[in-house]
Length: 260
Ligand SMILES: [Fe+2]
Ligand SMILES: [Fe+2]
Image (cartoon, rainbow, N blue to C red):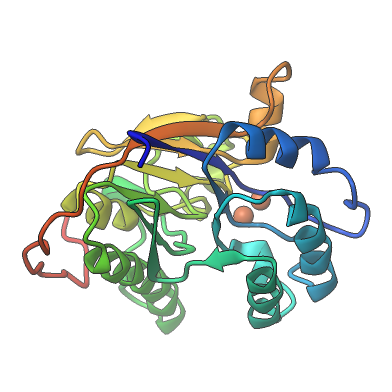
C-alpha cells in the first residue's frame, strides 16, 4: 500500500444540458493527479436525470474510485433517487449519512443543511415551520455522526455540501450566511477527529478554514476555485496518510440540540 492517498475534491459542477465535453479537461487532470475523487454536491443544475446521465458520461474517463454527496440543486426536481442510481451505475458511491472505506481511508458524507453559525444560529423555537427547518439541520448532523461512527479507519474524510464553519463562507453577502451552512455539522467532525472536511455550496466564499478543533475545512465549489485560481485546474488535492485500521472508537453520546 502507498504511504498516502491523494484525494481530489471539487463540488458544484452544476452539470446541465450544455455541459457535455466541458468537464473532460478537469476530469482527466484529476485522474492523473489523485487516487480518489470526492464530489461535494450540486452535481446537477436542476436535479434532472438527464443531467445526471451527462455527468455519468463525463465521468467515464475517471477510472479512480469516486465518492460524492448530493447538494440542494440535486433535489430540485424530486428525482434525487434517480440521480443517485445513475451515478451508481457510473461507479460513483453517493454518501447520505453513510460511509465507505477506500484504500484504507474512511469517507463519511451527508448533504448537510443551513441554519447559520455560532451563537446566531437559528434555534428550534416558535413556529412549526422554523422547527422543521432546524430539524433538517439536526437530522443531517445526526446522519454525519452515524456515518463517522461506522468507520474504523484511522483517517476519516468528511464530505458535505453545506459548510460546517463560517470561515469558508466569508466573502458571500452577509445576508445569506445562514443559508450556506450550519455550525451543527461541525460537532461530529470535531468529536471524531476527522482528517479533513470538503464542502461546496458557497460559490463566493473562501477556499480554506478550520473547525474549532483545528480540522482543515476546504470549500471546493468549482466557481470559487475557477475564480481564485484561474491558472490552475479547479480542484483541490489533499494527501491523507494511509495507516493500519484501529480498534472501534468508544461509543459517543449524540446531543440532538446544540446548546450555546
Ligand atoms: Fe452550487
Ligand atoms: Fe448548493
